[in-house]
Image 1 (cartoon, rainbow, N blue to C red):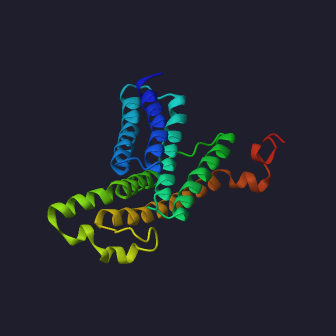
Image 2: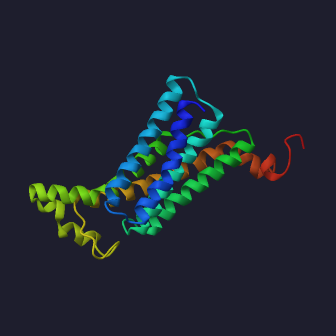
Length: 224
């Protein structure tokens, strides 16, 4: 196994560690979970970097890399729901999008059509990473900054007025933790937008075949 694929495998193995740390709520689980999540995200950057630099792009890597990303985001989102840091319905929409697009790509590949990741999908992933980071580490960072500066923005019930009751009734939403929820909205909107974009590409390439009853997806070969 080459270096890029090793980094991807490490990212996959870090997902159970992240979930266990967060869901069992071990001491300092926010801090430990944030570090595990960020290290996993760093491996996501470097496995692609080294694959291109060392010319070690492999079929296994192309399969494992998106799988590792989906496992990492899924594990983090489910943990955030358990911690009452994000609404379950938002996590469901994001995860349902991931499963739907994976299925769509699989169907397209049956017809020999590759639907590549677009820039919108990358923005979506970036928003998800930013949102999860703020929701995990935001309360800790808000607490530290409030102790250092005594600025009410970092420990403000005025922000809590907007978010309290929608998630955890006793959660005091400071600046960074509130930003996490805002970014989660952004991530969800981008997820829906990119899903529509993927479906349009799918339909442009295979819509006519499906309507005419041709191709493997309809159970008929082109020659027929």
